[in-house]
Length: 192
Image (tube, rainbow, N blue to C red; front, top):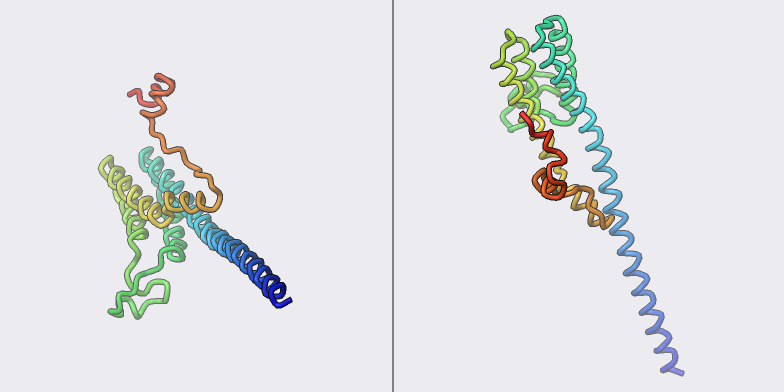
């Protein structure tokens, strides 16, 4: 009888351990999914704002290239609003030296680099339009986008999604890879 009770107790303990391990695995996976969902919501908002910024910069460039001074002024105003909204994604940096302590809270400290690039674009398009200014603004746009890219970190996000879903949502090919498969199907892209 004692052996039977011990055997039953061991079986119950083994089943309990198994159930606990399964539940722990599901809990950990659920936590990963929840964490990814929270991050996704933030990244979606960041990318929506970034999309508005990039559209505005593109329109600014077009307005500057066509000499539409009034339109440039309107778009600079739009960019100024987007810069202020960007403070919610890229808040000023407090280096502990009380820089800007006399300013309202959103403006205390040092402006984040991402917003510095946008302020540079704002200032460039306030100058007389020229090919050089448009080139400078394009460099600033690329640096801005690179900062957002580093925050979003698409490769890391794709790898985390793959760890949860067992799928990788990017095709790691470049034009030359496609070109080898299709023998010139997209040559028109690279024509000068």
